[in-house]
Length: 114
Image 1 (cartoon, helix red, strand yellow):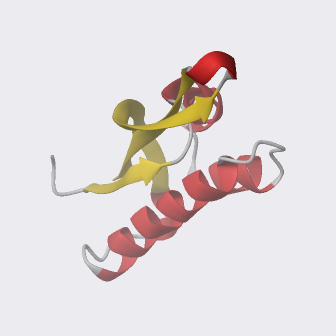
Image 2: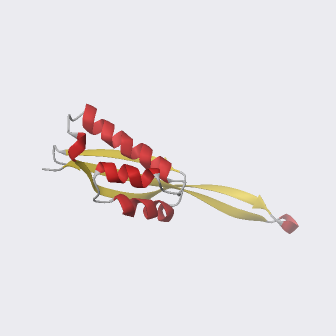
């Protein structure tokens, strides 16, 4: 990472990576103000978690790296798989059906524009 970059990672978001990627693709390579507005007015449930991670990255840039928040933009945003919580639902005749509840990992990298 260059010295003008800031990273924020959220490791346990309770949604599938496919659903999370629907939100992430909208904020890639956008400036901070438009990315925040996109997340605030999105109807997706997971957009609140993404907004928390973005605000964390902005706070890291301002407090730890002394970057100008007006010049920040989302350089990279990517999603990965995390844990899979397994639950069982009882079925007829003594059987059980497995329910898999996926978790995702979100990484945001912000950069100060020149």
